[in-house]
Length: 325
Image 1 (cartoon, rainbow, N blue to C red):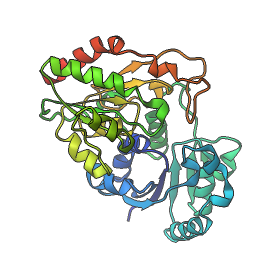
Image 2 (image 1 turned 60 degrees about the vertical axis):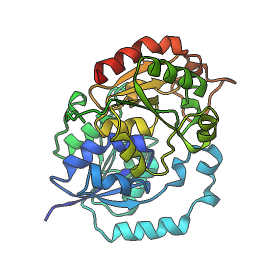
Image 3 (image 1 turned 60 degrees about the horizontal axis):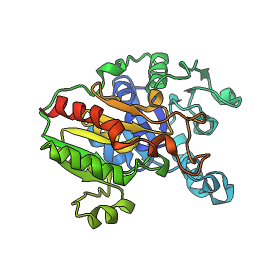
């Protein structure tokens, strides 16, 4: 009988996709339970079918300062029931690749015998193994590689992830959304970029977030607006390359086998570039406050909005031609 392992990844879609190689490797040695946001149940059949998913939306992962730290709004009853359910599973081990004391406290309260993580603010008191952090500019995937080594697992290097060849439909999938407005390149720029691609005879499919749909339709664009992760995966399967912002859809496209081109602004590409070996990034304007998470210190996030179509077009044209011609 395999030992039981609890894995915590409570943040966004991109974070969970980055954990995919670890989850796949862990199932070879452990009976794996993943605690993650509800969309993990949609990813499971395709990315890690042997993982049990326990859906949970942690209040502290909200991208809104007030909701995140207002303890009166936390779902205490739901959290108590979750704790009891997880404790009943009697985990041999629990692991988190995020240096988050709340994760570490949760691993302690569910009774996992061994608890591995990267301590912060003295959270080593909740861990049985305090792992050494990778280099400060290391990709988030390197934290999973460090955790995997501590568990006796071996993960491939970044250049060998999601590299399985497949026939690529000759379609450029452009997704203009992102969870945070700070990470959205102006829609006007995307519109000009799409026009240039079509002038070069490339087929372009636009997809967007719900709050952008009216903007695209008002300009005569038949934009897709995926309402679920499952729907988005189906749309990505009809495309050959992905263009978009630093966001979950780009990471998911990478996991679906698409080369991706990502426009980075407030976040560091060293941390969050998609894992596909053919993926490329465009670094936005320099800013002394990078990386930013929830908000910008300036009236306008010039690091991304200051990037023009002319700035990125030579790179994007070359990228698309390389993979679709």
